[in-house]
Image: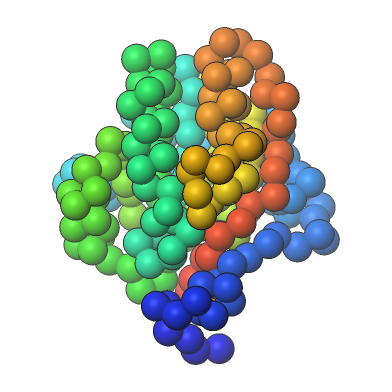
Length: 202
């Protein structure tokens, strides 16, 4: 189905709720809470460097967010991710955003990161294997990893993508606070919502 991204109808069509038919996590067909992962290696970033999950050995928590330039839901979270990265950086959180969408270029990502002054790593995975390995289905789709790289939380960033001031359940931020305090998040999974990832045909 073709639609113009600028229209409200397109935004509504792009919104994706994950299927209820899952076999792993509550809202994830591939992984579940507690799984240990090592998911990216040698991915180019907007900083001109190549990145690996092993670059974050000293991190006390890693927030991995699958995002994109073109999705209005993902765009709505840019400033919130900047705040998350800066608010918890000194406590040991590292935020890594990964773009796996078919048709989105590293050059366009660099332009977006510069314009929005991203305070976090923004990586390009043309192979899409990072998203497939974690069962990501939409942008944004967030995963929080513990110091030993177990999944502590996965799902939505919060419960109100349209209005940051209207957020009542700040899922990812609260999970970060718990993990940095050595605790398990009260909410470990939530239903992700966003634009469907544009997959390469296999």
